[in-house]
Amino acid sequence: MNLHQKVAEALNKQINNELHASYTYLAMAAYFEGQDLPGFASWFRGHSAEEGTHAMRIFDFIAKRGGRIELEGINKPQTDYASPVDVLEQSLAQEKTVTGQINALFELAHEVKEYSTQNMLNWFLAEQIEEEDLFSTILDKARAASDDRWNLLLLDKELAQRGEA
Ligand code: FEO
Image 1: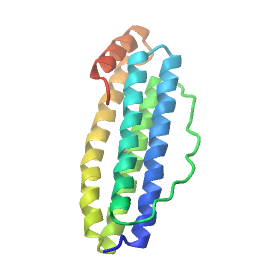
Image 2: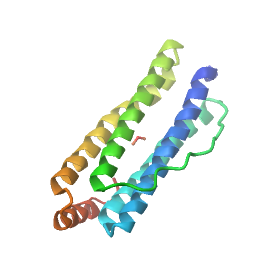
Image 3: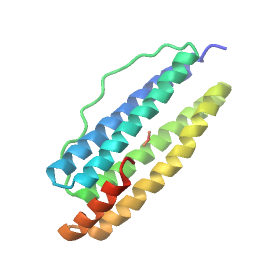
């Protein structure tokens, strides 16, 4: 069965959303490089790469279903942040936005009886639970560290050891 047109359009939009998330996390990595917090920077760089894999999962799905892939421009991400806590608050908010986008996609796929799209999206629904949990854990730690340089360096070391998100 051909991929439903409306679903194909929404999936293309989600490729863009995931790439925008990837680009935003890269901007956050750049912010942390500027703050001399290389552990945070590498953690965000890893997460940026992970968002790229999310985009490609959808890209591959559209291709396999014989749909048309149409890439759009990626908006410029925010490049300046008030503090590490500000970055973590914004990244958690972004994950919540993505969860809303995946839920809306699932609802559309359900409406038009796109069963295999729903099956593909199940992976994303589970992933979003993990992502929100992960980001809120790091946000808690950043809040606890606050603006104290020594605490931030300790958290930076922990994030460096975690490696890729
Ligand atoms: Fe692809 Fe972090 O959501």
